Structures are given as structure tokens and as C-alpha cells.
Length: 219
Image (spheres, rainbow, N blue to C red):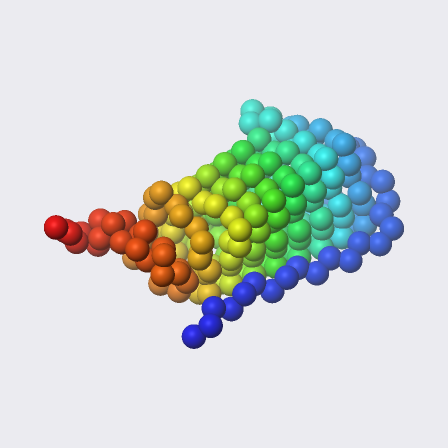
């Protein structure tokens, strides 16, 4: 059985209008706009929609004063060379979106829906996707210290050229999740890895983790 690869996002950005800090607010509908070189600290963008936009060299705020994107929807959008000490977008939607060259300290995305999303060359310390639904998501050439997929529903997700330190998937439902090449030093929820694909080398590397999780003594 061949593991199915994620479908790629489709973005087609034409001429974009210049977006300003004052344009962003709760429940605002922002379409065809480019936001660049902005500091979004403490901005309230709850339930806002970004459709066919570009965010470039934007600071999402520091850990104590991040932008609030709770329940926001980002679709058909490119996010490049941005920084987010904390990216708070719980219960939000990422659709047909490409994120590249971006540094994320804590990505708080629990209970979210992601469809056709690609991260490229990003550095992420902690990614909280608990209880989320991910379909067609790719992390390409990324460094992720910890990803938390506890209780998530994950389909067609891959990590080509990426590294992950801690992989949590307690109670998750996985299908066509390609983790070949990853060498996490900790896996939580080994019994929930059904539906994941690993390679022969990983099978040997993970043997001790699998045995420990399953209560098997190897002597």
C-alpha cells in the first residue's frame, strides 16, 4: 500500500492592495491585500478573515503581547519571513496557505482545521495542534522542537527534509501520515501511530521507544 502524499495548496495572488495596521480588527474581511513590515503586537483579529493576501516580514507580537487570531480564517494566502514568539490562532482555519521562512516560538492552534497547508524552511519551537483536523499538510525543510497532535485527526501529512524533537499523538487518528526520516528523541502515544509510515531505519531506532510504550522488556 502506497502512502498518499499531501495535495499542494493553490494560491494565485494578483495585484494586491497595500494593507495597513488599522485595517485589521475583529471579524474584519480582508481580501487581496498585502501586509508588510508591520508589528501586530496586541492586535485583536479574532474571527477575522484573510483571503488571497500576503503577509511579509510581519511581527506577530512577542510572547506577552501577541496578535489574537482566535477563530480567524486564513485562505489562499502567503506568509513569508515573519516572526511570531506566540502565534495564537486556536479554533481557526488555515486553507490553501503557504508559510515560508517564518520563525514561530509557540504556535497555539488547538481545535483548528487545516487543509492544503505547506510550511517551508520554518523554525518552530512548539506546535500545539491538539484536537485539530489536518488534511494535506506538508512541513518541508523545517525544524520543529515539539509537535502536539494529541486527539487530532490527521490525514495526508508529511515532513520531507524536516526534523522533529518530540512527537506527541496520544489519542490521535492518523491516515497516510508520512514520518519517514524523522528521528524524534521522544514519541508519546506510540499506540496511536497506526496509519503512519516509517522506514526500516526508523523501525530499528524506535524499537526501544516502542518496547517501553508497550511495556515490553528486552533483555
